Image (cartoon, rainbow, N blue to C red; front, side, top):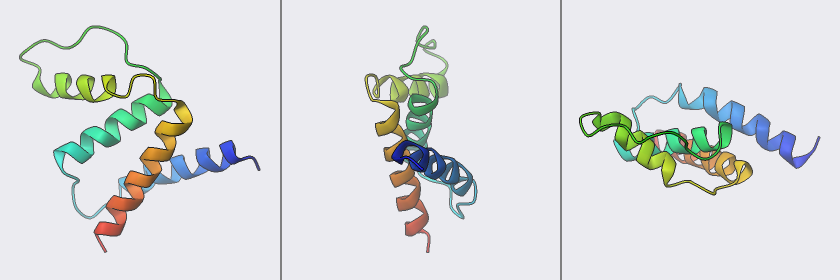
Length: 91
């Protein structure tokens, strides 16, 4: 099994684990999870930034936009590490 396959497996496991967290992560942590997930699965953000009244959409867009240029591998690695940190904080 290659390192990339190992990372893909860890990424999938982290996606399941994040759904089992006993406490909801902070808004900043949720945006980090969202932006890392989108960067890892879709790549750089595209499309127009949501309008002024779409606060949630703008925050998500801006968080994802901040990851522009991050490689898929780096985004997956950061996502796995963040989920591990969040799960560790809840013990």
